[in-house]
Amino acid sequence: MSSGKHLQEEISQRRPFHSTGAEVVVGVLRTAAVIERYFNQVLMPHGLTIQQYNVLRILRGAGTEGLPTLTIRDRMVHEAPGITRLIDKLEEARLVRRERSVPDRRQVFCFITQPGLDLLTTLDESVNAADDAAVEMLSSDDQKQLVTLLDAVRAGHRKQARPTDAPRSPRQR
Image (cartoon, rainbow, N blue to C red; front, top):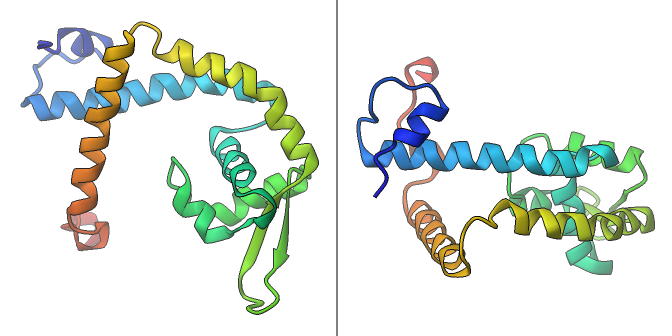
């Protein structure tokens, strides 16, 4: 079991973590930030953010059916409260298009365009290589174990109260 020394040194923290749980949380968040910076280096030369790339991947998976804007938001890896602005930018770049639903004009469906598909095809090989490189220091068994552990953490959070039921911070009271 890690003593937290490496993480403490990396973030220049002088005092030990108050609990193993705190060390885990900081470790997961720090690791996510490191990996995100790594992926930004792959996507930025193509003018994409990680969130925009995520939207394009979601829409490619939806195929010709497209998806409502809020469904895209709910499927994203990163929470995107500004999903409309995010899709605006992708539409301006002609990577997605939007259509109002015929039965319910309030609902907007999003579709990936051919230039969006072409961009993803261009990125597929380098993103796949980045996926592998991001965790190449772990054995295959360790990677599978990490996936299982992260699944367990997310499942535990799904069972907990909704964020709106969480205690409010003093600033929100």
